Image (cartoon, rainbow, N blue to C red; front, side, top):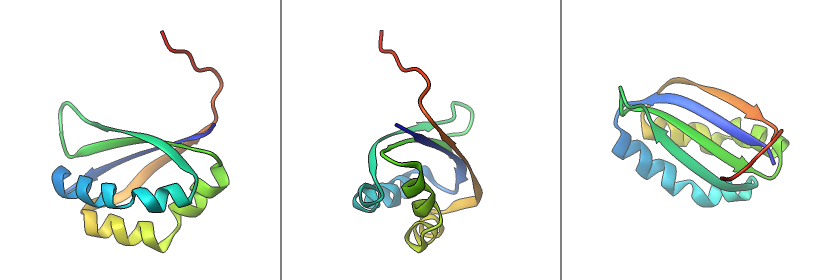
Length: 94
């Protein structure tokens, strides 16, 4: 399954997280199955999200959606995000 890794700086993590959480159902509609949210140890307003999804094409559609653009503005995302879509080559749990 593909993952979409998104990195961006936000004005305030608490506000950003509330908006991010409000988008859960929207993300599910685009094929999201899970996510992890990470904060930089040096700057807690620098956020990395690992999104797990069923289909990379749906992820690209979500990435250009008006719903996401509006949410990012409301959440205080500073500047354009750095987005990478990856396909699984090997996964293991130890």
